[in-house]
Image (cartoon, rainbow, N blue to C red):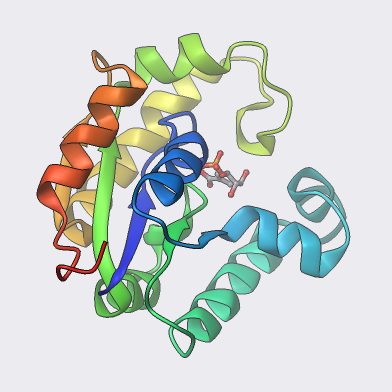
Length: 173
Ligand code: S3P
């Protein structure tokens, strides 16, 4: 009966898996990046450019606090940096089953080579940046997670299977 929350690095598939999973287990989908964009009326890239990353991180925590007071039966996909704050990790674990979609830096690089929507990766050496961020973040994703799925060699259907066989839906889905 709890939320199912997807966390993981940019490009690990949280958004797509979130959409498919929400259909599969018949839950409403909440996507933190999309909700922030809707509430702010501008894109994530614009928020970073106009107000800076720290402002965006505060928006994430504010949204998470609100989600923690709302109904607990959703699929929630999160922005890749959201679990970096300790308060956020605590809240995530309180409000749901946290599923970490673990991915290797090289796979992220392949998937996001032509992407322009991730402000953190618009730099000279995206692979180096991905490796550096991953090194900082991996232990924190692992700390936040109840369930870990290694996604590099799995197709979408296999990822969904791994998740649904491990989450406890309270006999209600
Ligand atoms: C970020 C990941 C993005 C988005 C923002 C920052 C991050 O979400 O929240 O660009 O710090 O890893 P996705 O993980 O959906 O790309």
